[in-house]
Length: 82
Image 1: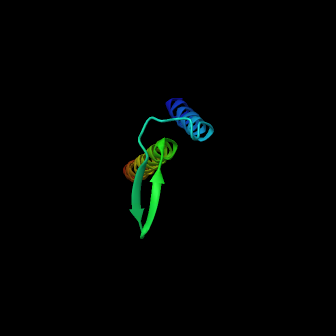
Image 2 (image 1 turned 180 degrees about the horizontal axis):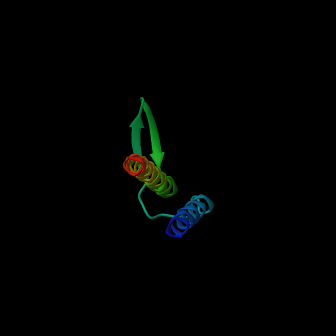
Image 3 (image 1 turned 90 degrees about the horizontal axis):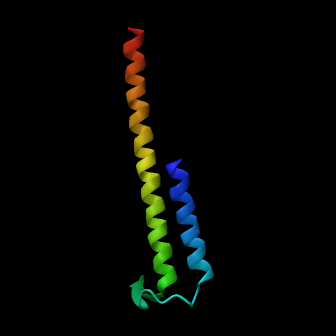
């Protein structure tokens, strides 16, 4: 249930950031240089980058948890068979 609440709040924040394009001035416009191109980041883009990094972190933690759970359950099955 907690995962649904987290995902819903992340999606809501993303939708809010997309629909408030140009109206939100939380962060100052920041210019960064990537591959010899200058990119201007505004508030909406920064919020979306934060949301994206959060989603990737949650995915990584979930995959790590599933991997360790899979290995631990296989060890328990081997012990039960013996």
